[in-house]
Length: 103
Image (cartoon, rainbow, N blue to C red; front, side, top):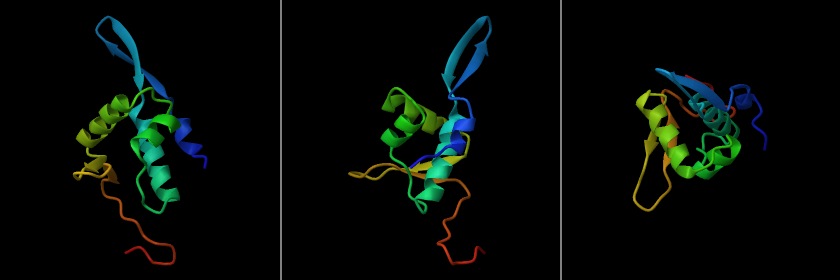
């Protein structure tokens, strides 16, 4: 399955701190991927490895760091339960099954 629209955001962004310039992964690209994935999969959240592959991120720890940043911004919530994978929830979103009217 292709999620082309999220790729309109650049994968890497330039960050300036004082005299230093460095590149970092774009959290907006990750957020857009999560939104499109959840829309395509009827509200199911992607696993970290799917985010890593789709957004061309080199490690699961980087995915985790980006998601924690999105959580601090209030864009997502991450629910973790013992023995199961983390569930990503988009803040303010509600899944409406096809055929139901949104209220």
